Length: 385
Image (cartoon, rainbow, N blue to C red; front, side, top):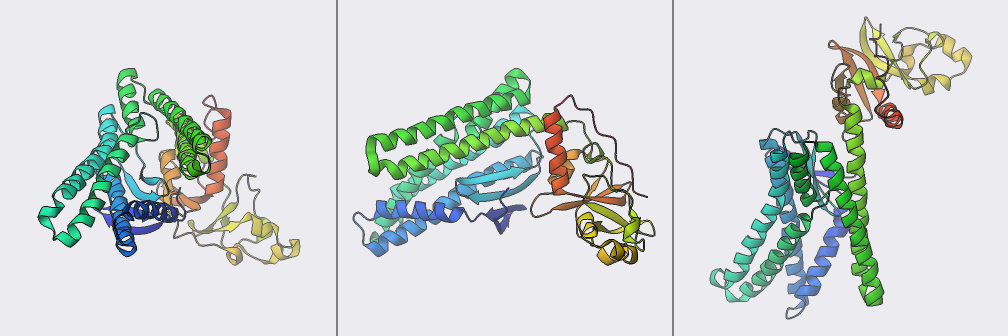
């Protein structure tokens, strides 16, 4: 999802990453803080206060996301990572909550931590003069007081009942408990999120109409947040549709027939007919998969070259690729493409039999979505021999 993110650290086994889009967000926060602190302070002091405030605000967002991640792990969910980006942070998880209670607690703990941060900063701002020397007490109190309000606002905004906000997930948990149907609850919460997104866009447009050029910046921010929330809510609806189609399916049901394998010393002109939706041919040596040959590279060769060249000449090693079993849940195959992985080895009874690319899986998912739930599982994949 965030291909440009870089790993920052690990916190209790949870990977924390920074996306490059966080940089303009941090700059915007620092600029807002500096403008706020400029009154009554020298420029250098105001800039220092803004820098410290910006770092502590991003740390507050990280604390919010860590609360989600650690509570999810405590409840047996597989947390992949936390990514800080333009609109704050997101906790990526592979597994869904098993009960409405788990869904509620994992969603609600983030805003609760934001309120705790707000209270802590509020106390610091109130008693700064008791703890710190007079020259630094006032700036510390001012930074802490602003961070207290910002964290409270963050918590309240996140509790608005519309996905993908935490309040939307709280709403989803309640609807799931009432309706006994998680997917229906997800769709309702996502629709509520789209209503919220549309309201934010209209708010931004109205701000520009009323305030003119002076309201342009703030209006654009509201519009950008609204567009992001709309896209995220729509993505959740699409994901629920995909989840419904994937239920009960194995990897072999999605990938379909595999390309026939060839031996390491087979001539390239002797390749068996490859299914049109396959781009890689498995290459075996003594019954073991040692690599693949790209169909595209074979097609680019002159016919006379194919007669003298062997599969080993165009061999691409695959030892570094993740492995998924043909009888594993199809979601394991999709999860294997996380990060910068573009191909995955498939094994049957522990023996590698083929390699499937991200594009092939995406094409199969698109076909599955287009045909809908009435589509029967494709012919099962047979092991390459």
